Image (cartoon, rainbow over all chains, first blue to last red):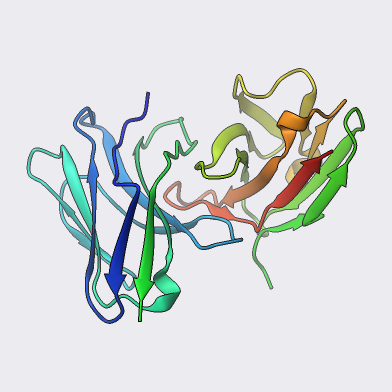
Length: 111
Length: 114
């Protein structure tokens, strides 16, 4: 009953932008799109979240389509340290605080 | 370091033994979560505490699993009569009362049941 679909893996060149897609065609009106990443042997790390507007912070940008059925996480200048598994999660801001992770996208940044 | 800490980082045990893991959340974080992660999969939610109250438990948390958070500070996760299928990374996360946006994860405890 995964709510999101992500490609299993992708490669990116160091210094280039990495665009990570996520499909969430059954997203509800009150559900936000979250992105976390997990570097090898570490716990997941929050990156960014959004509802319907595009969002940007010091780590990444999040572009959500107008119909909210898909989104793209953009790492503007990928570095080797960005090699990780990236998880796209949809979550309502209610009493349901848990995160429901899928398998994510394994991103490998190559020099 | 003021991040979430977990102990031990690695635990090897024989099938049938009991194990207990500890999680120390970030100071003043009132919410605490336990997740389990098997190889190649994303973390799966196990249980959630708000202060000392355990508010939600996943169906993954069988009768052999028990979690506590006395006094709303650190938490323990105990697995009784371990099985080989319990081998996984057990992750703890915490979040502050002011926001529900971020969960801060610890490094995890890797359990191997032989």
